[in-house]
Image 1 (cartoon, one colour):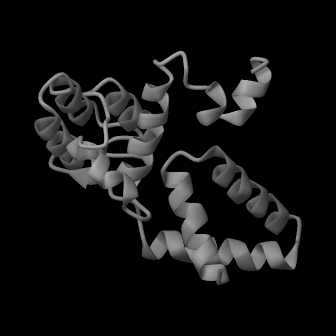
Image 2: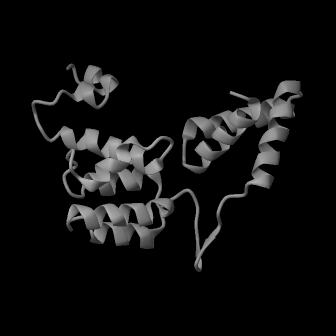
Length: 163
């Protein structure tokens, strides 16, 4: 991976709420202030990327951040018990305005994710927030079945629970 691609990835992960990425940027800035030449170079690249690719700040009259837009969340939650096709359409329309965890929770509480569910068609899309959230919600929904081992969701959690 080229350094500039890494900078883009770290900044976008920060915008999505990734705390590890945030810590990396904070540490890079600290080290740059302490005189570390490589950190100073990376900080310039980060600042340049942010200046060239500012986060989206306006959608209609609402200010947006990496956090969930309450109107989008309400829209999605209001259709979560509808038919799978209508719900999948709502997910696709509201996903840009929702944080990843809010999207996972809404999908989890929506129609049961099965192989023929319209939303499962998105699960194979590469580099897609909707796909990642759908896969996560699917793994969580599977835990409703007591025969599904916890390790299929998270091996670390399974270990902590003695599975």
